[in-house]
Amino acid sequence: MTDEQRERNAKRLLEDPLFKEAFDVLRKDLMGRWEVSGSTESEARESIWLAMRLLDRLHGHITSIVETGHMNKVLEKQHQFI
Image 1 (spheres, rainbow, N blue to C red):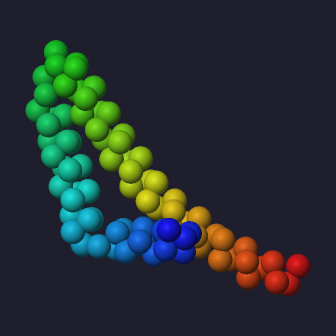
Image 2 (spheres, helix red, strand yellow):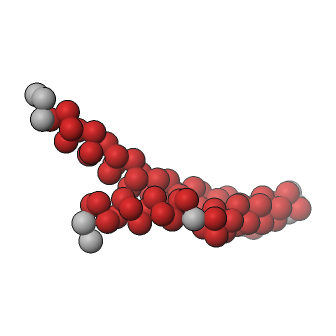
């Protein structure tokens, strides 16, 4: 898969309503589980925290693919004039 294809696919994912909904539902579910967990449920809280970080990292990775593709296009345009 080329970098341009990766960028297009990542952008399509980030703009997809179902993809956005999935992230929102998962985040709300995890936060809800964290809020009702007891102070003695440290393993459960740690598991929820790890799941939240993983969700953030996944979204961040897909976002970085789009941003990197955009930056490459900007640099290619500037390179012509340097």
